[in-house]
Image (cartoon, rainbow, N blue to C red):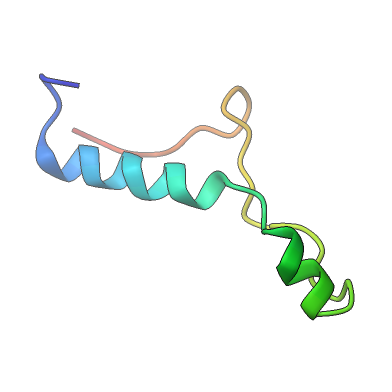
Amino acid sequence: MGKKGLEKKKKLAKANRKIKRIPAFAIIRTKRKVSFNRRRRDWRTDKLRIED
């Protein structure tokens, strides 16, 4: 990560936070109306369009 710029690092970190599944208490609290993360991204197929 040393050669990447700060902007790119920030965008990659934000994308990494969005990947995570929603917590179990959120599923319970919403009575399964919200049961999965729609913005979930697969590292192999869905590529980020981040430029240098």
